[in-house]
Length: 176
Image (cartoon, rainbow, N blue to C red; front, side, top):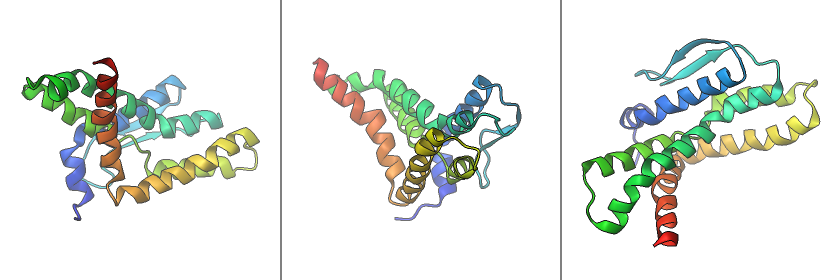
């Protein structure tokens, strides 16, 4: 089933906003000047952060993959408190389902964009980039492109469900 990306982004806009906040947060951590942030818009791209090119190659890679870290952790943490009433107590209320939705929405936007992959690609192909950065950067670029291809097959949604529903269910099964 084909659903236009803008419709998916509209339904899952909290995840888009957190994705852009994560880029901005990593820019701030590394003291990289940010020129403009669009958290959400009804256009392509639905969100973006314009910032200065970091002098440090690692910083550039971390800014690009920051949303993977932040969206994954935040998506899981938001959904976790709702998992107990939803999956074990049969006493879930509307707020619990809202938290599950937010967790899935945020986690499914964890994947860096192909634009982020292009930034990392430029970093790793630079002849002045050290070998360790290249060793880490090349596979990351490949994984981002695979994730982008996989999103055509709803990999991003599957990831969001895994983080916001699967992991909390697994934690609950170990604790109860």
